Image (tube, rainbow, N blue to C red; front, side):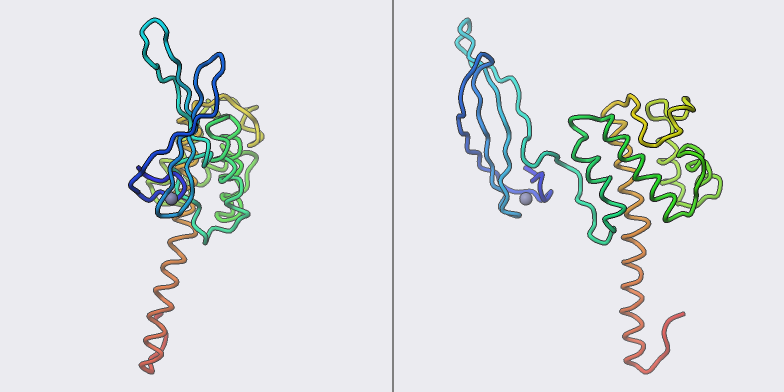
Length: 215
Ligand SMILES: [Zn+2]
């Protein structure tokens, strides 16, 4: 399986620890140790013995450590002032898509204001300005545009006044916001840093050879 901590594939061997029974049936902890990051992965599993059929019916298995899975960790190059709300939005996604969407919208607004220097009355107008001015690559612009339609955000002017406003969203809509933020982190922080490092490395070679920096 793919480790939900480090996202590396590992050969899993499962250990099941019984932790009790109640009116809802048997409760187990399923334990797997990731050979890559050396962290335990815990699932809470519930099943019930059906006296009628004599079979054990499996009811549910939920991931309890780590609390969230399958999202790549924020690249280290992204300053925490930008990544904090994103990380929090990931953590609460499973429990409350609404809270997650509110956090990710606030994160998006902060990025637009600080990195793209756009400040308008509300996030919907700010997104429009970013699109009108073509401040990001087309694929990211299309993705950001979709955020306005999430939870009918754009259709309700009162809702869009405050980015922290809680609106009804579907889990996949809240997840979309996180996907868009990932794209922005990549484009605004990771790529420029990688290009700068390559440029520095080339200039170091040029300087060694007694030549001037690349323009
Ligand atoms: Zn791992």
